[in-house]
Amino acid sequence: MERALIYQAHRCGACHVANGVGTKVGSSLVGSSLDGLGARRSRECVIGRFLDPEKCSSGTIMPPYRFASGDMEWITDYLVSLP
Image 1 (cartoon, helix red, strand yellow):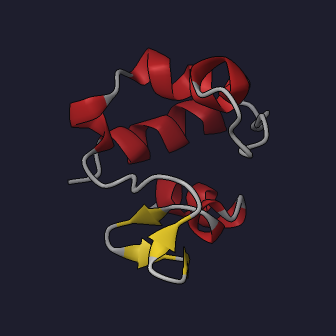
Image 2 (image 1 turned 90 degrees about the horizontal axis):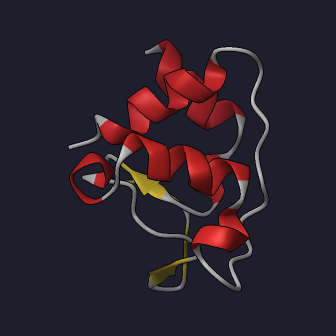
């Protein structure tokens, strides 16, 4: 549960959907759905997107994230565990 709180605290749901919950602009998402992320992306890829989103996805509006100590692992654990 604490891992999901990190997701909420950083307002990831403002652009993404996780577990069917998040913000849509009209009928589409600003960012991608994070459901099933672990089946599509490795942990290393997820961490890389947090650190340098532009490198992974040219033209993205996602800002780089620098989490507090330990939080990077926790949020990554949460995201790759989403069904």
